[in-house]
Image (cartoon, rainbow, N blue to C red; front, top):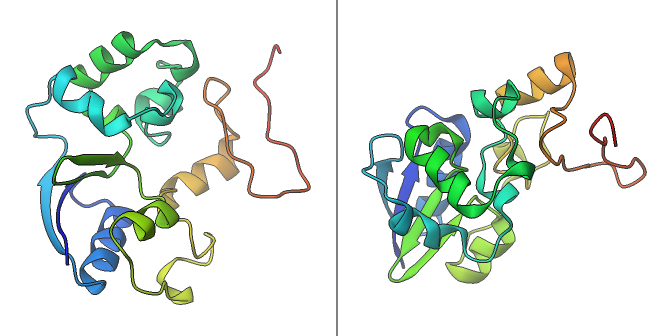
Length: 169
């Protein structure tokens, strides 16, 4: 199958699950430490494609959770500059195969691009939907305890409940 360079945060629970799913699907996964990689804006930018800047960020990063970094207020240059100084801000994983680059682990996109084996219902913890391969299980506890960060757009998994809006809007 495919030879995929997989930029991860070593020790990340979800990155471990994502690599295992790719390997079980027959792909050769070359894991690289995203935090130790010598990134430049020119090298990092292609991973984000046409996604909005807010989707470039790891919502579990300490700078996001503390409110120090508000992705909704940044342009591309500012976002890349921040990521050069704090790679924890970069959404994970970064995937590279040939000339194509992607950010995050959207299983539908990955399945169409690279091919994936069937997802097992027991592959994700009970606190996640079986198809949620990105939300950090540790951050789910923080959200339950502290609420959602107002500077970052939040996904709403319940179709009957609107996403929480930032205060002051």
